[in-house]
Length: 522
Image (cartoon, rainbow, N blue to C red):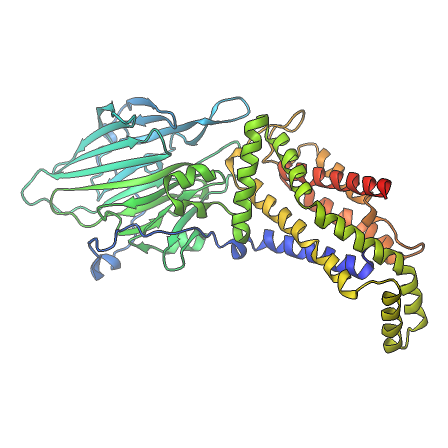
């Protein structure tokens, strides 16, 4: 068993690291991902001129025919991945749901809802001061590969606009073909802007929405701060979009170089949009763009683009968190309950770490047996540090113990801590946990326990673990630690997702059972 100083050091290290992970999470994880270049090697694209870069960012839309529009026409498109509702208001997506992901009432989750105003809609195309609001529905078509196309057209005095959406049936991928055709020989130039609306999930207590941008120089996907969103623009963005806790809408490919600049609206945080600003157009042109529009699950993201993996906040334990998620997915396929899958995964991980646990327990027992004699020597040689060290080394030699073994016992705790942080990242960042029930009062493993039952069980279990007991009668510091550790952890546990707490409770209970069995067979 660790002495008081070792226990205090381990406890403070745990709390410090965990606190820093939460408070400065962006510094730790960097929102990093594997990055590829959007443009192929040797491909040509137009570079914005100095004049283009000096233009102000226009974040509003003026609809030229808004007064003439009465009622919108809606059309519904269903694919294995999407249930989409399109509208003639701007030829935009009015609603988007995902049949593969459902809420507690078995209704498909949505990331797009009807916008409060037309300029907050998803995939609205703005053109100078004469942006048409009313589009004509041209029809939809199911292609041979199962993809579905939906086409809308609109007109201004000098331009004809055609928007064709392609909803992929195998991936969470939406392509958009924008065709701009000049109706006059020398039309006035236009500079189109495409608005990518933010995903929403009203059921979340705090649906935090933020912009994301790819930094190709650092190979990272970064969240955009409020100040950046208000003031910054990015030239030729490789990837830009908006995300919330479980969904993302982001540009991933721009084959024809449409996006000369990218920036964000400065409206309220729950309704922000990413804006792709095109080049100044004086003649007919067409542009193909591709967007990831879907859930932030590892499989869904990587199936579309490996770079999107950076949207998951796995941090510096990314490889470990992904491995745990894969194991959790396999177990879920067997039991069809993520709560049971978490419990089974905890048992498997404890079994893998059993040799280290047994070794650590043996070292702790050696140290515990020697603690009374070391305490006596410390009191006897209170003013003689050299004499104390000599006597302690003689004591170690008499019992065949190496001083380094105690440090090794501390190091054996590192895998447990790494496992905890990896599970914290894995269970807190994937949509699979959202509204996933366990049983009884646990109806959402991604949210905190509504009745705080799991936090109480975790604190009580930790309080009655052997390491929380007083090692020596009358030891005031040990007594303080016995009550301080559960009290501090209780303030952390009450905010944790139920899924992570279920892992902690299972881990503590299994550890206690392991200790009981070890003493019984000893």
